[in-house]
Image (cartoon, rainbow, N blue to C red; front, side):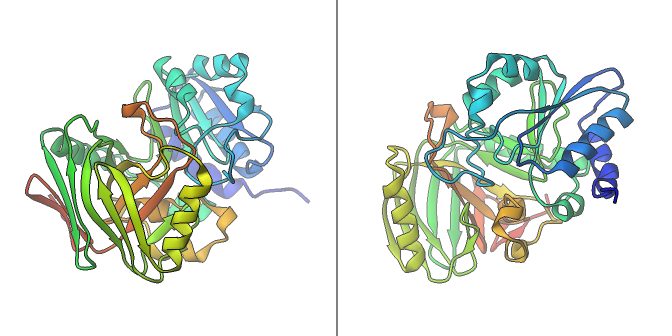
Length: 343
């Protein structure tokens, strides 16, 4: 029997590559590992051909340097087979567009920055098929996230509060505001399909983060059941207290044996209106990375571990998506009680 699983994906991948401004005659590398989805490889290959591009499908050995489980976590340490192979790196640098279908991506691997500096565009694709299709980006998504980036660039303080007790003050000086819009259309641009978010990399933040029931812990892909309080001083988690999830976090931090495990990394808010907060509960943990949780409109997303602005390399990367927060940037409310504000 013929395997037609990629047919339903072909249109979505073609539309995605068109958003990435793939042009006739450009060179595409579809990067995969043995555990990557074969239907994604086929759909990306066919979509690149439909756009008139030259395309190579490259499958490299799996295996991550991370000393902990690293499939679909968002930590993005990359594959050892690429990190240690300059021939593979040169292939990626020679492409106009890389469609990264590896299970973890190279999000926080320095080698990815080298590839981007060569002018290569990279689009990372990892979630389940219906997640990709439901959250297919729109061209105007980029304009909206750039507006948020502009606000962060000209501001000094971001404050996050919630009825649960969160009260965090974030200094934005040197925080290098960034964004994800779901497509990579500029030379040297990395992005993630699906994703629509504004983020930054602050050094200093102080106060308390209080996780409420229903907030989402990633990469565990678990919903918080009992309140968790994290005391933040100077961008560092000084204390975690609460119920079972507090024990989970403390154990993760301790077992990581990583000096940056309790240091805050990027933070920002989601703008993906097609994303569902409850989606994480609808799939097996191995089926998705969890971009619905990371990017649903009105969330406050913060993380721990790696921090490229400060030159911190770390495998101890958590993303925590919070509901019900108010996010204010120099007095301008971008999210109020978990509701994204139209501006």
